[in-house]
Image (cartoon, rainbow, N blue to C red; front, top):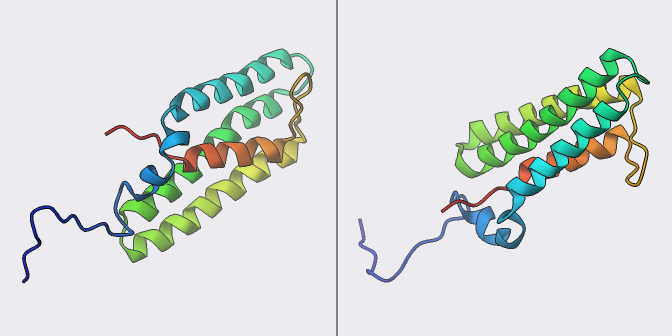
Length: 137
């Protein structure tokens, strides 16, 4: 086994902080963005409480969380897992995203007001926010 020089550091593509270094500008304040986003979704559900059925309210709360969880699980399986875990994480992310898409599309929910979003857009934003990692070093 060869020894590395003291000042040389090997950077592997599967390094845990590989994506974090690339997205450091975005991910430095991502936890605040996620908090504001889920606050926005909760506020929209609160505003439409009497106008929509309870099934729709519950699915609008659960579906973005599942999509966020799918994005976060996909990122962690890519960064930390073996090849089998990466493949499994990819398929589980697709499964959770499809479940959340079914929940939101069966209700036909869309937000109205200053910011108008349909259910699919809410899920895509949630998935991307889950995939972008918060860097705490």
